Amino acid sequence: MKKITIDANTYVYPNPVTLVGTQVEGKANFMALGWISRVNAKPPLVGIGVNRVLHTAKGIRETKTFSVNYPSADMVEAADYCGIVSGKKVDKSDLFEIFYGHLKTAPMIKECPLCMECKLIDTVELPTNYFFIGEIVMSYTEEKYLTDGKPDIKKMNPLLLTMPDNSYWTVGEYAGKAWSIGKALKK
Amino acid sequence: MKKITIDANTYVYPNPVTLVGTQVEGKANFMALGWISRVNAKPPLVGIGVNRVLHTAKGIRETKTFSVNYPSADMVEAADYCGIVSGKKVDKSDLFEIFYGHLKTAPMIKECPLCMECKLIDTVELPTNYFFIGEIVMSYTEEKYLTDGKPDIKKMNPLLLTMPDNSYWTVGEYAGKAWSIGKALKK
Image (cartoon, rainbow over all chains, first blue to last red; front, side):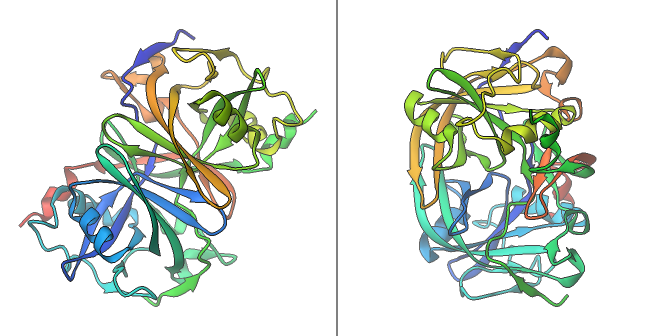
């Protein structure tokens, strides 16, 4: 078990793949984003790391809202496309069927199995990125993606991203019940 | 494609499963944590959402350091155990083989295929949680987990967590090359 050091520029393993929706200069825009986490339990807050120069950063700072949409694996081409082309140069507003919820400036994607609309509550200014913290005001799904009223990951079939090998993956096998399987080790 | 609303208390899908290492009152402690994201490109910064009342929060505030360790799927019981019992009541310092890197107060887990040692650079105070932002000062792995010098997710075989169904999952099938497969949609 000999440890070797690798680059400090190491990535969280793996990242969920999301599409962040914003309204920029009056037009819906979507970027592919893997740097996301829940950050607070009550109220439900989510944070996203967005490069400062991106069109999405401009939209969030303008409207104080954004959405987080989870593409399913069969949307991999469109999701990746949103990470390749900038909204500064390409109009991505007609890539998907769009809908809006309570917030009027957080466009969401109908084709995505799970969408969250978020109200910006804090912005952490970091050297190359903004970390935008938003309160999830509502989430949207469809009956067919639920099991016992809860989002079913295998039905939603989201994508994962690994860096720096830059690969997408699906979710694999069930590996146990959380807050339960470890009880075997209790003394 | 009829959308229905679900709870605003929705989770990032899915979370990576990590074990956060801290030194608390002079003793190594580990908690299971899924609320993690890279938050900045240069320097490499990672953020973790930790409930304010936890032993881990105390350790990070005391030492200004922490580690992030990725258990492989065969460590699922031990990883889950770290999320069930509190370091306030149970000594978790002998659960794993521990090693240290540049920082002297960020215990890492030898059995984990990937470990990052982090220096605290900012703490975002949120209602129920702290969001600790750390700079990754170094990462550790083993030759056997690399392919072409990069961490190989299939060799590392990390765990994923979904909430609120509280299930662990492995990483599944390869689904495409990132920043590449979407080029097919370029006009």
